[in-house]
Image (cartoon, rainbow over all chains, first blue to last red; front, side, top):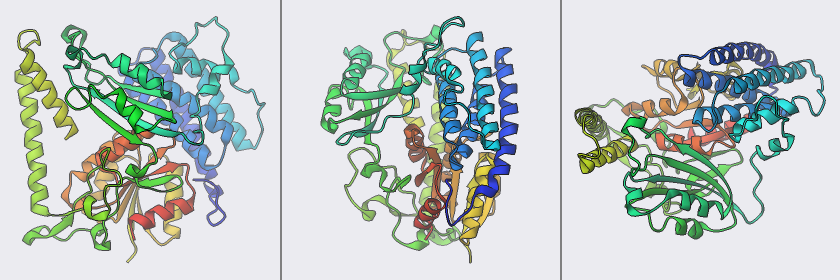
Length: 361
Length: 121
């Protein structure tokens, strides 16, 4: 939270700096574990990310801009490691140690009201940028300071819009002659794009089938082209061969209503719909949570089309049935785990789709 | 009777700030430092809205939203996720999990009160 005339939040600075000291120490221990070959590096990377993220969050509240900027680069480098875009080598471990040291410098400077040189930590920042780009330079290489400039999200030019596009190919997409890479390249040609890949469906190497699509992607695209140009990229696959969700960021689908905050769907009309529900007996009703808006639904209607009242018993039955469905899907998956896709392609593919839909549900 | 808000964040600084702001505006605030403690705090507790951070140990905010939405008694309780400007994927996840809205960090006390009043009139 930023400084405000009505609410003087400076009283919380002492708490923040105490917390920073703990977080920096925790980060140091976590990096040491990672360097020694942690048993669960994913957990440690997540913990390290949270440390830096918390320092950044509080720093933002007090407008410590240099600290926030460095912490943003630092945490983004950890995102690259968590997503597998970069590997945790001994050299990268050393960069993380140096990153934590520089972050500590910024925290101390903020605490003491001191001003660090403008280029303080620039070398480490460039090394962290190398991790983000997946091109962490070897220990002896000179850093490339200019790489840092690409990290903060660029402000959109007038006339441009930012889009979030999620592409989830059906397992059999590749067998239809479609190549996600070609679509991604075409999409990138529309403007400035960032990509996040979801490899959670990727099986172990021994179980992998080269003809099955396991990856899905989320793209953030800044472009002056409209929705039609984006839809055109996926016109041959959207629907049967892939799940494509296109949302304009900050557009009506989010029902954004303010600077820095927004609602995902219109609120229920009556105040009682947000109050604690009555006892479940006797067919009492409770407001149903508005379903997330889908692409294309934006602006389709107001409150009446996005919120309904449903009997609590019906909601309970629905939740129970979904639970039964999940259990059945898990049992089927376990029983069919011995089948290979070569011997039972349709069965395995069907089960994968069932698993995907169940997760979505 | 004062509206009750559950504030969930692993950062004590952020919890203190949120609580200070909300209490100053007349709300009652319950605090939790992660998803697990938040779920415990909700047992037998009526709340009018929930504000949760996303990145937390033990149980993250997205999982927390899913678990809260799975409980019929909280089907209509507004849940706001705290996210960062660049975290569009977290906003998407939050929406998919059943969150009501989002607040970008850092935010001013006025903005916090504005959206809380919006979802919790």
